[in-house]
Picture 1 (cartoon, rainbow, N blue to C red):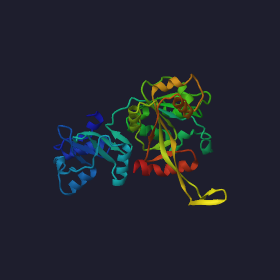
Picture 2: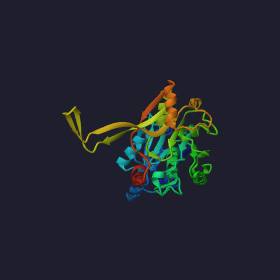
Picture 3: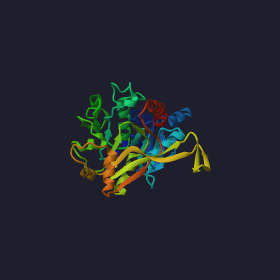
Picture 4: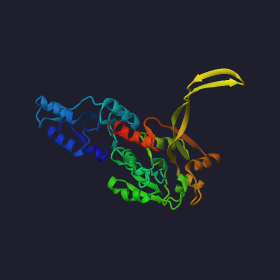
Length: 351
């Protein structure tokens, strides 16, 4: 069992007093009760203990007298997105994940997982944009550093990746890049590793990859540094690997409603009329998985955008796959988007 998971795991014979110390020290508001085979048999929260004490149960009694023997669990392989949706619906802050035999695997929290396997794959976050549509806020502050729920947007993004087991990040910088670099440094304060791509001229999102100091040896994720989402990044990588793709583009459905009645005609004759029709499109969600071979399609210090690089790969006959995402996704490109993200954050990510 992973070390962090062991810290919140107890046996049914443990005293209530000892379990209270586990709850206080771990700060995850849950203790997991397992048997000697690591099979989850119950959970314990502060509420369970309080209810037991009100009934007269002694602090030196075994935790089995107050534990919840029917905890809500999910099977290993369930996406974080599904778990977070269920947590919001049930009003809980954590859900244990078990395998098909009932053995404890991890715990999904509102902002990540305890016990999630670490991913060695690199995450490259594009954080060099000008953020013109967010003036005057971005005249002295790069867009990824604008606060969302009290912390920089980019820090929120990195924290979500970290919660899913990602620890290695490369930030692509240009406009006011020193502000970002001064804040994150080498990433140690967040418990991750951070290095940088520093453009001296504008090279585009694809061109930035051409000057990457150390090229990844395994598939890696690229994401725009202004996106908040509940997507499971591990699922993206698993899909990418399974399909043997060079590039995987994440997409989501976007509905566009025409605000008028639309007429279909043949010459001056009316054929049909449709009132305010809705057209559905699959849009680029700004999240990608790429295999290291993609660097063979880049020239050194070449300036181009990532979509242009992807089309180059496709035009040469190589596999480019599409991964459909659902759940919350917000591309923060305008004042209205920023206001909505700030309003949504507590509801979606912390409720």
